[in-house]
Length: 192
Image 1 (cartoon, rainbow, N blue to C red):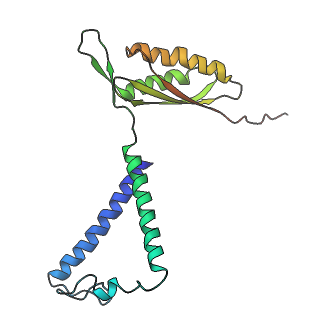
Image 2 (cartoon, rainbow, N blue to C red):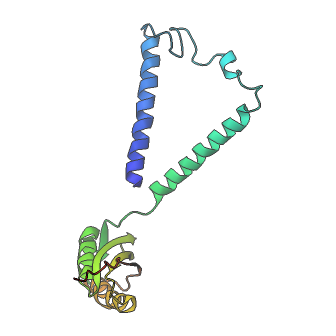
Image 3 (cartoon, rainbow, N blue to C red):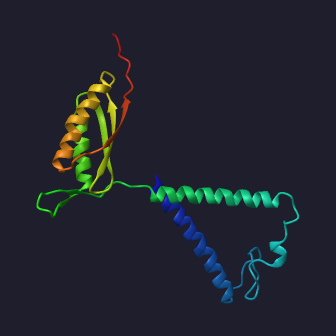
């Protein structure tokens, strides 16, 4: 979601800057602007003294400016935290015992962990992702449980089987995990 918002915001900002900058450049090079355009000619300024001071005396001006700037700051902070938030782990450092180590693709380990978690009894669907650092990864597993599944047994099986195999195969001392369990809706049975 943040990738889409990031691309849309950057695209809109870029388009706005290209249109405004291109129009100012075109008028500066001698192109006649339309009558409704923000400035009239080559030697005209974008904001005159009268334009800048037009609404200062009105009571709504400063609260509106402060509110708009506050919204812009909040949106910028949200965008910054979304961009800086940790993403999925690209690779995991596997200790090979010779002091060198090997790199395992994070997506490969996620795929195996997802497949093994989905194969557990009582699990209808699973999704796993890795976060953290490549030497100390952390797993996030989302499970969709069948209506008859026991969450305790499923969580125990996930910990001992799927997460245990992933930890052992990557040669990790520990693999902290966060599991989100959600029950599938029970469909009504028809009686004939």
